[in-house]
Length: 162
Image 1 (cartoon, rainbow, N blue to C red):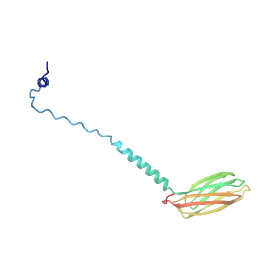
Image 2: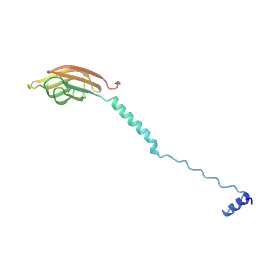
Image 3: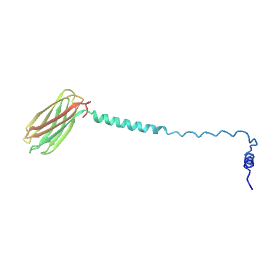
């Protein structure tokens, strides 16, 4: 026996308590948009800020990185680097060894290296160079038999690229 769809629909409405079949049905309620948590939008911004800070600190850091190598056969005792406004102790440098420090000056400056030889004689060598506060770069020094054997310098303004 065929099912009368209209009759079946009328029965359903009556079960629900609606007798007015021709009345419009309630409008369907819209499904609210799911909002992303606010903190999710902040993650890419935080990552970008961290990358920028690291980049700025790396590219624009100041100071002169000084490396002193003892290429002689005797140790250099109590090695100290001197620049305007500061002294940096490197300690003893044995033959074939390297010591380093990053120096910061308070005004126009050059580098001097002070040490004592094995006979107890003090030495103060002028490594030259020219730098001011905010400059950056490297100075590589080799000392052999109480004399500067090699002096390579790469010094530039802080805001210049490497």
